[in-house]
Image 1 (cartoon, rainbow, N blue to C red):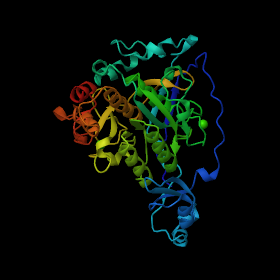
Image 2: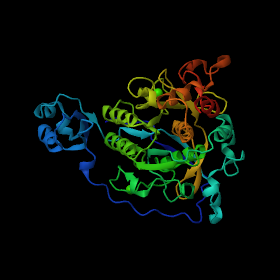
Image 3: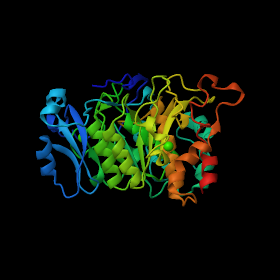
Image 4: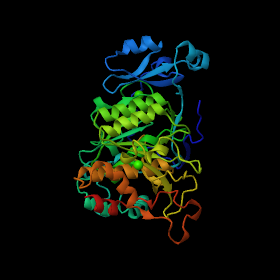
Length: 431
Ligand SMILES: [Ca+2]
Ligand SMILES: [Ca+2]
């Protein structure tokens, strides 16, 4: 089993609960061990083969199955996944470790403040979500510098639809669906899913300050700050500890693509390549989605999967890996780096909604990634004059140079070919 070192670490200070925070209805219990197999394995489904035939052939349940796409994912017990078990099943494919392979890409500092005091959430609703549009970020002045650097105000002027009509799937720890920041911004509830718990309510669960609780809410909040009229599709795959299974990540990617998500945000990663997840990403991109994933937070000269595989190959044109720099343009101490990395954005002390009506700040490649996702939503809501397949490459090409004058010398060409997200230059190039 792959165990990540990047489980979200939260440091809380000065938390103030909002007067009208609402407790979400408790989720249904997880649907038992069958939903969380020890191992998974993708197999080809020949034309005309049914799920039952595949299950009979392999002697294992098919937890994902798509005859039209020609694939199935089998659930295997640890015994079945052992060499002798595989021989007994006449399997030659290599199974993947499923449990807890992915984790939220956040080394997070959460600093709550009493943003939501007096129950006055007006600024988050309707017009209020256009927080940045008039050039004044009244509600979250702490983000001013971050957003000035990525040229958000200019970008929103260039893309006045502000992401309207663009569905951004946030595949994460869930989203605080009751948070006033998301009022009117969520996809229809019938499209929500909690793959982690096996129910239809992707609300976050947990305790703020522990594990990954609040991570997905924060990620979704960054998307909406960049593209205030985009639609968020909340899909839960990571548990309260910030970790999640290969199977659930893959199922959520398939789900997002089936529901028409044009952008899929994966602020999560694994040390190991997952063929099951990689194939799900490939299918999603073939259905027209752009996928962004975070580089991870171990300060390593290698970036996490699936971000690792986004620079080239089958999904390269419609995907983007994102690391983090600080507001001086220097690599964040935690950000992974690699010649595979395509772009960096700002991932330090980014303020964003937190569960229970709070405003919190997060630090990690997790919050840099949705800046890129939001930027893609801005572009897509207009009519880009370049083909869809060129958008992520253009975003990387139009970034600021973070290597000039010897900057980031130890990381030359490992924070993207150019470097730091510049939404204005990107949109000028593609619109
Ligand atoms: Ca749930
Ligand atoms: Ca790419």
